[in-house]
Length: 445
Image (cartoon, rainbow, N blue to C red; front, side, top):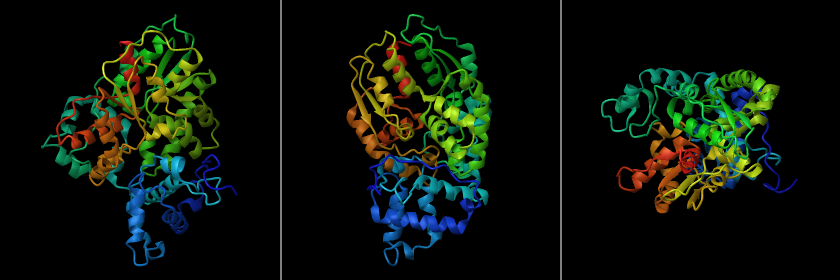
């Protein structure tokens, strides 16, 4: 057997249909096996809150070893995992094909799946995962919803914190009455026939965040693609299921994967590339869905046809070349490489794309922002999330660039909050953008 990390990591399919998967005794045995290995290694101590929680738990026990830690005390370790996969992909020397066969994120997912089956997941937090239902409802009353969720609203934010566990100071996404699917039906950007990549066709998977919370990302992406000769259509069958995955509802995610992959099957058969606009959704379609329903041919085909928006634009740049028209921007750009972008194992595609902008001063930060999807906005996690993201906020403040961007829009907003803390609470006037919005601005859109 080769020494750890000398072979490429291999991700095994989730065996969630096996009765042993939900057996609590077997789960506890596996938790103890993995935690003992992690305790002896500790390479992941600075990745997230899970590992310091684990190590403190063991170090403060009677024997200083795992044998004196009761299993009932494991909950904070599981709760702190955001399923970002960074330990599996970048740190752990014992992932498959190593004989130790460690997959820490999927073990945390297994624990949550057991909790979910026993209805032990927090009800209020589970309701926050219903992004399609919540997005549709909030869109009808977007003005009121945005007022109620605004930071500093002393009337509603304490109530939201009490009812749903969302920290009163956490920045929350806004909602739009005119969602992206409605906007896309009315926006038919002119396809540049003189572009080197003219003739390409692609389908944009809108994602729940872009559809309900930030339609500008979708509009920017479609404009950039049209200027580069790409004819696009926009679809949105449903949320990819990442919020449900975080809460251990694997059955629900499997149902979503089969449904969406079947609906998109004809487009994939046509040879269409399915472009996702946020990295978490790309990760779900490319990697998590095939691991959850490995027997589904439609899911496998969709995974092979899926591309992150930045990845797709870089492919144009390398194969045909980007269309003319990019202009320098006033001020530099600070780019945060989101964990779900890194987990796709495609390299720094956002950075590659932005470097096409002439004379650009680009600062790249490849470290966790601390947000972790819905994890970072919860009352019990918010301060920890800011602490984890403080090095990123500090680097962004030091760079002092005109633009802050991340493939994960939630991470970008979280970084701005971290910068605000560093500045003593003074509001940061910068706006958090998606990298494709930065590219669109350089094109003059």
